[in-house]
Image (cartoon, rainbow, N blue to C red; front, side):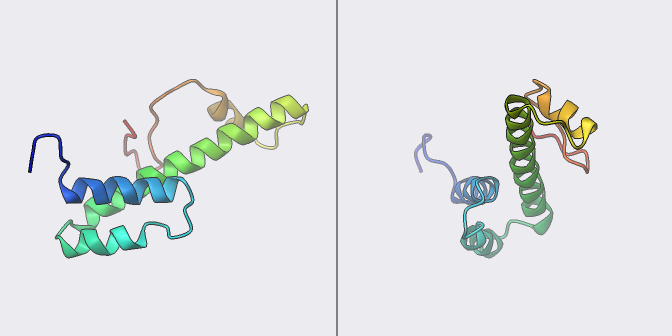
Length: 100
């Protein structure tokens, strides 16, 4: 393997996370099987899934907030909208896992 090639486990983890975050219909199930087959433990896989879901949900909240602001709609949940309007590039999941 050359220094520019990523290990197959890293590629599978990235693919799993991006599939979840992008709401891909296959949901990364193929990558999940591959990761288990090559011996990546469930705790590591679960961390990737947690972060991907957090990023997906955060993106949705920010899009909804921006739409509501431009549409002149009142917010349904002020605390969610306050978080969505933030400019933080790094947040944590509900379990405290850093996304950075």
